[in-house]
Amino acid sequence: MTRTVLALMLAVAAGVPLAAQIDPRTALLERGAWDALRAGRAHAAAEGFREALAADPKNARLHLGAGLAAALERRDRDAMDAFERALALDAKLTQARALLGQVQYRFGDFAGAIRTYDTLISLAPDDRDAQATVDRWRRELELHDRMQHAVSSHFTVSFEGPAEAALAAEALEVLDRAYWRIGLLLGGSYPNEPVPVVLYTGEQFRDITRSPSWAAGAYDGIIRVPMRGAVDNPKELDRVLSHEFTHALIRGLAPRGVPAWLNEGLATALESGDLGWAEKQVRSQSKPVPLRELQSGFGRLTGDQAQLAYATSALAARRLIEEAGGFAIANLLRDLGEGVDFETAFLHRIQRPFADW
Ligand SMILES: [Zn+2]
Image (cartoon, rainbow, N blue to C red; front, side, top):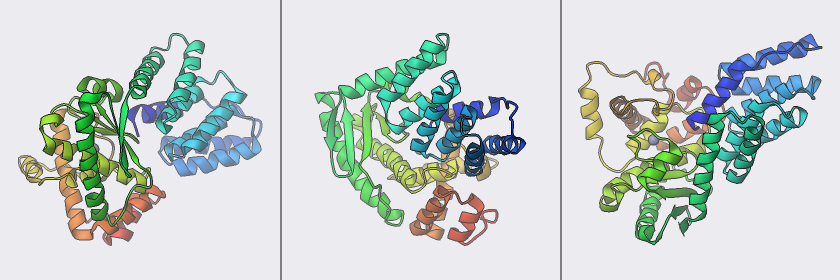
């Protein structure tokens, strides 16, 4: 999940005031559902909002909450429907509009997201963040509209001009190799649909993804890669594409619930090349970083901290692959995606309590 969507969701969940309700039971259900959302228990929240809506279907705030819970569970269509219903009942509910735009964007409906944010800005002309967001989306849409595409059965690679055509063809070859190699390592799991890949200049990449300066690629449903250095360094191209493809594969198995160390660790461990650098990194530390501290994304870390986080995660993931095998890991990921909590899924699939491991 991109940081923006999650940050926006949590801000909304934290800030929604509870208005007095006619029916105390519905009020109680609603309070419980918002509490569940704030605690990150999206499924319980979804149930709570569903029950409350059965009693009070014209309550826009309940639809907003139901949409948030759905968005956290990555049921994007349900989320968009719920936000639309909230807005139909209360067109001034700007939080629902902002979230609708973010989910439309994440879902790949760029034009819809831009329309939603244009309306948002027409109602709140001082919202600078919203303006900056929609400007960035427009630049991205314009860029993608003028891009060319190279296609294989498993990937579509978009690139800007004839100068990048050779690199795009090379990227396709590298990706197809990664597809089979990594899919096999993860117990024969493959994405159901072709994975979209976009090659950017360094500047476009930073503008569109707003990634930290150390990032060599990004995955948010689309594999996004800056071409810096890749032209004369095929090994680096292979490393970056293998890493981001692993994220795509993991997302296919588990749209949610995967701790950052496992997600980044698998992506880093399954890059081509050895992990000597990671062993050196971790050895040079006086104290190891506990995996429990590496639950959420690494995007907020500085370059040095990030390196250590990736090294620690990669070594843990490699150990997991060696001890449990790719098949068990794929099953662990599927369980997490279905909402099983991490400790339970780990014990069941890896056959050891996570705390001991
Ligand atoms: Zn990564």
